[in-house]
Length: 409
Image (cartoon, rainbow, N blue to C red; front, side, top):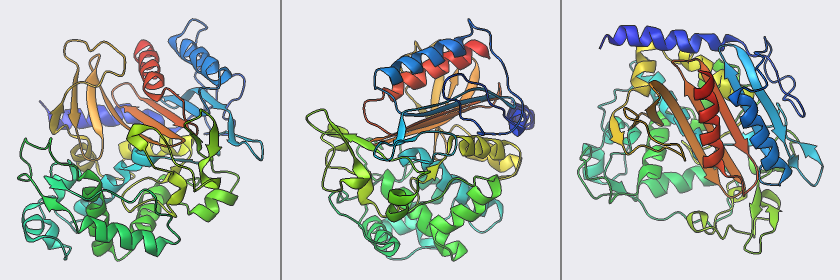
């Protein structure tokens, strides 16, 4: 394969994201991004997707925003439900949502910027930059292993009941927690099924970024990613700001009796859902280093554009970031996997081939929180789905979005 040609083709696909307009009936994200609109026929698959979302919202199963951009034109932009039910503030273009794991690619982009500048090397071991870790981890685990979740480490369970009170407390807790990790299988081996230390690995990358730059992870990402991309509505906001800033969506968490509460206003309440048992996102004073963040839907489109036009990474380094490195079983999200479809791990995000084109995406979930964004570099699409209440069938929504995009590509 001509990798240079691949890079040029990818940049051409992303280059169409230079501007985006607004098109939607009902509750459009007015002011989302300036630019031209791309109208769609009434029988277009995008319209079917829009009707599906409207039905979910009418049934109380979706609260949030969706944004679909194609080569500079916003094809669909809608807000549904309330960002703050108590104050009756609707979700809209300027509403920032917490991303949970959907923000993890930021740490990968940040470390890649330092690699591009020659300040770190992807084969550097952890001990090259940090101290206080077990000798085998310090000497064997590399930045590449951490970015691909192949470090072979286990970490203790996090204390989900703890209510943090400051940035410093959060930072100290996660730094100490990551240093309790143990090596359980050889780094880079194929036997990663018995490990559960990806979260600690992300914290390790964030701590490397801090050691190299002399800044907190939150400040470095704010300056070098959000600032460079023009993501003016995004940041690593603290709990006090989450409570008072009317532009930030509150997470509505389902309880065992089926009712929903504002998680940020009810820190004593926890999720009863098995994979989120005991969690409440409001207990975090600020997101853990390397994780999360708050963004608006238009800002995620700006992030996608900046990945493709050289704003964040030079083209060769952007190629390294999204290069498939570990084959995975296809995640079809309700779609029938076609012959030739394939899924892989990349740095900080999964990538896959669907219907002959690449997709780069990341999702995240927490009680009252759902997020998913996808870049289609070959056809110039970007999709954003952000939710602030439990009960939204996020995987099904993402599958419907994929069907709509592939139907229009």
